[in-house]
Length: 91
Image (cartoon, rainbow, N blue to C red):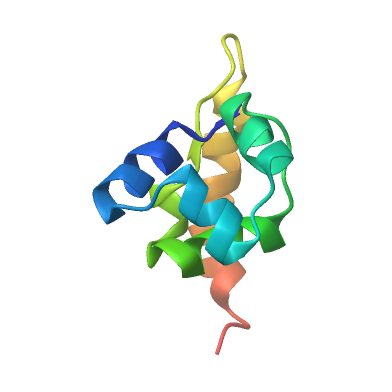
């Protein structure tokens, strides 16, 4: 699950209000509602929010594994992607 709780914290730390986002950056109320409800938003939008807030993506977005999500497969994929055999053709 993707959560945007960090977005609200980062906004507060930067001293940017929802009103500022509406008036100065043309961020819509519907987008803020989607963030509030942890709904899908485009990566382009996240990039734009990072630019507005002068922050990194992890200051806005957090991945929370779903209960019962199989993390064993994820661990295996990470091991394979970082193994020296898979990095032979890397520059």
